Amino acid sequence: MKSVKIGALITVLGAVLVATLIGLVATSVVTIERLKVGGPVYGRIVDVKDLVADILPPPAYIIESYLETTLALNDPASAPARAERLKVLRQDYQTRQAFWSAREMDPVLREKLTVGSHAFVERYWTELEGTFLPALAAGDDAAARQSYGELTRLYGQHRAVVDDVVAGANRLGAETEAYAAGQVSGLTALEYAVAALALALALGGVAVLMRRVIRPLVAMTGTMVELAGGRLEVDIPGLGRGDEIGAMAGAVEIFRRNAVERLRLEAAEKEAIARRARRQERMDDLTRVFDQAVVAVMGTVAEAAARMGELAQAMSAGADETERQCAAVSSATEEASTNVATIAAAGNQMTAAIQEISAQVSRSATISASAVEEVTATNHKMEALAASAARIGEVVGLINDIAGQTNLLALNATIEAARAGEAGKGFAVVANEVKALANQTAKATGEIGAQIQAIQAETHGAVDAIQRITGVINEMSEMASAIAGAIEEQGAAMQEVVRNIDSAAVGTREVAANICDVVETAGRNGAMAHRVETAARQLLGENDSLRRSVEDFLGGVRAA
Image 1: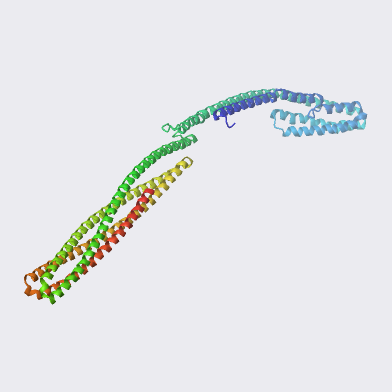
Image 2: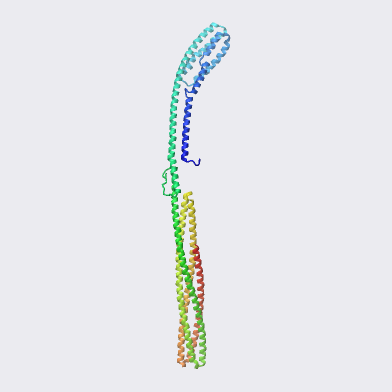
C-alpha cells in the first residue's frame, strides 16, 4: 500500500464507495419490494390472518354465541355447559369491544361497530341471560322458543350491522392498500433520486478531490523534483491558495528561497575565500618585504653599532695615548724647569706631541661625526620600521574589521537557517563554521596586533636609545672640539716658548697648566669613549631583541 499512488488510491476508494452505495440502494429496493403492501411477505401475513378468520369465528361477531344458543335450545340437557361457554364468549366479546373502542380507526366504522352493533349485542345478552337460559333451566320449552325467536331477531339486526362494517372495512382496506402502494412507489422513486444524487455527489467529490488535491499534489511533486535537481527558477503551483495545498506551496516557496539564499551565500563564501586568499598573498608579500626591510635595518644597526664600538675603542685608545703624551709633556716641562738649555728641544718635542694630539683629536671628531651620521641613518630606518609596523597594524585592523563583518554575516545566516527549520539545518552548520573561522581570524589578528604593538614599543625604545646615543656622540664631538682648541692653544704656547726663550719659565708654567687641562680633557674623552662603547653594546642588545620580536611577529603572521 505504501507504493500505491494517492490518485489511484482515491480512485479505488471512490469506486468502492459508489459500489457500496449502489449495493445499499439495491438492498433497500429489494427489501421494500419484499415488505411493501401487496408484496410476498405482506401476502403471507394476510393469508395467515384470512386463514384464522376463516377457521375461527371472530369474537366481535356473535355467531358462535348464537350457535351455542341454538344448540342449547335443541338439547336442553346441555344447557348448563352451553351457558358456561356463552360466558366465555361474552368475555371475549367484551375484550374485543374494549380494544376497538380504544383503537384509532375510521370513525364511521368504529361508530357502527362499537355503538350500533354493540347495542344489539347487549340486548342479545340481556335476553339470553334474563329469559332464554332461565326458561331452559325451568323446562319451559315454549318460553325458551319464544325467547329464541327474539334472540334470532337481535342476531339478524347485529348481522346486518356487521355486514355493513365488513363492507366498509373492505373498502377502507382497498383504499389503504392503494395509498400504501402509492407511497411505496413514491418512496422508491425518492430513494432512487437520493441514490442518484448521492452517486453524483460521490463522483463529483472524487472529481473535485482529483482536481483540487491530487493534481496540485502531482504538480507540487514535479516542482519539488525540479527543485531537488537544482532548478530553482521554477514557479511554485498553488501559491495564494487558502487551503493546505497553499500552505504546502508556501513551505516549498520558502524552501526554494532558502536554496537560492544558500547558493548566494555559497557564492559569497567562495568570493570571501578568494578575497582572503588574495589578502593572505598580500600579507605574505608585505611580510616578506617587511622581513627583508627589518633584516636590512637590523644589519645596518648592527654594523653601525659595531663601528660605534670600534670608534669608541679608538677614542679610548686616543685618550690613553693623550694621557701618556700629557705625562711625557709633564716630564718635559719639569726637565725644562731644571734645564733651560733643553727647553727648545723639549719645546720641539712638545710641539710634535701637540701636533700628534691634534691629529688624534681631529680623527676623534671625524669618527664622532661619522657616528652621528650612522646613528641618524639608523634613527631614520627605525622610524621607517615603526611606520611599517603602523601600516601592518592598519592592515591587521582591516582584517579584524572583515572578520567582524564575516561574524555578523554568519550570525545573520544562523538566524535565517533557524527560521527555515529542517531545510536550513545544513546551512546553519556552515554558518557556524564561518562564524568559528571569523572568530579565529579575529583572535589571530588580535595576537598580530599585540605583536605589532610590542614591535612598535621596541622600535620606539630603539629610537629613544639611538637618540640618546646621538646625544652622547654629539657631546663627544663637542669635547673633541674643546680638546682641539686646547691643543691649538698648546701649540701656540710651545711656539711662543721656542720664539721667546726668555719667557721659558712663564711658558713652562703655562705649558704645565695646559698639560693639566689636556690630562683632564683626555680623561673626559676616555670616559666619553667608554660611554659610547656601552651605548653601542646596548644598541646591539636592543637590535637583537628587536630582531627576535620581528621574527616572532612574522612567525605569528605566517602561522595565522
